[in-house]
Image (cartoon, rainbow, N blue to C red):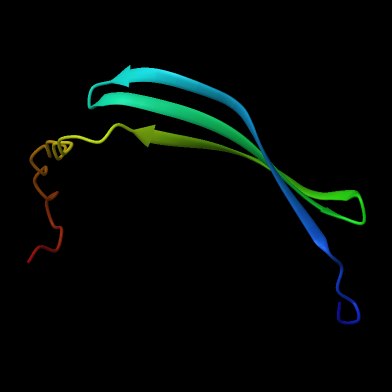
Length: 77
């Protein structure tokens, strides 16, 4: 390795897997912990929650409520 650089070891560990039913279908929640180590010293640890959705139909776009009127004196186009 070039001077001043240390080898980094990355470890990812699945902590949990949970399946749930949502309005758009089946969902799987996976919690993963990632560790980065240099010279056996823990430098970074992070936990990520990843959501996987079953393939299928498209999720409908959210309904947008009408915009309120601009207040008196406001600049409008």
